Image (cartoon, rainbow, N blue to C red; front, side, top):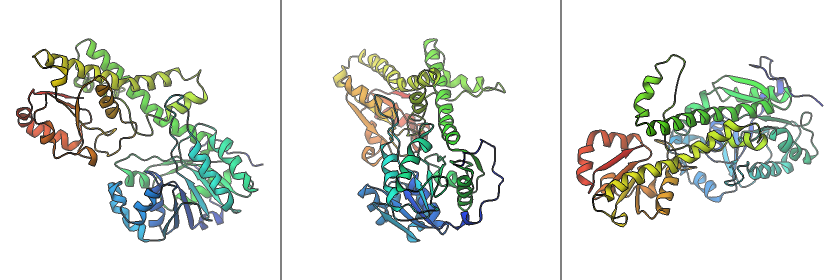
Length: 423
């Protein structure tokens, strides 16, 4: 049995002659990674079959309403009029890309691999000799070789000889999907050197970033480390901001001064961490090595506690307003910005949503507004804050920031009690 390659910086071996002959691509999962990936391959002349078990997702594509959910893909909608088909089940193809979600269990904090297993099982009846299977979903180290490989081999085909298997994690920042999908460098981990060569030759046809080769478990480790690095550094900034509050220091104001040091780059603190990557992936390290991940676990816990800490600050502000004669029941609270990050219409793991929930649990009446979310747009920001006693800007979208900068006086006049806090 061929052995996985040793980790190395960049593959220089010439791809095998038949590895560039792949033309039929099947993408399993048409979410925020799978759909743009499928569209990218279609725009590059590949025959693409996009697979999803959600009828609503398939209808969105078939009816050409993709931009209703993914507005940033408007530049690529021409891909849907090329050789792009959709299906509820995979069809025979040359290459299968698995881009399904891998959420974390809310209580055990373990990785839910059901979608990965289900997608892989669905491939078994259609696999053919020479096929290349690429897992892009973020997973705990060892998943490609210990979970995906055995399922594929139920087909009677052997990974490494009959079919080829790789792990190639996505590196996409929501809000900048098109540019990053094309231009970001990629790490690709083959289960064998031949699998790596074939996958590299494939991706070289659609991306402009460099492609770096390692083995499958090392590539999995790279992906988790990238997001864990971000999470740990955000946790440091958040914890320092809590200490600064205790000492009466404006941490956001002094962060630029701290970063004048040539080897220091403290991040900006916030209300917590959301999204499906940074808020989730570090737990996969904790899952596989629970006794060796104290720092990673603590960082996750620090960031997960931030919504509750922000609620404490809001309640403190509200108590001051109540001291002017208004009761808790009379207070009109307006919270703006509900997505997990500025300028992105995505609420997955949103700490802002958690803040709203916690305030309501305390008995406060909360009005919400977010210009990027149709269900929270209301009539306008001004209509929403009219008569409000408190305006908390949880996520400072560009358009909200501009309104506050230009019309803060007007906003305060519309409010009953002009108390504003920008987190």
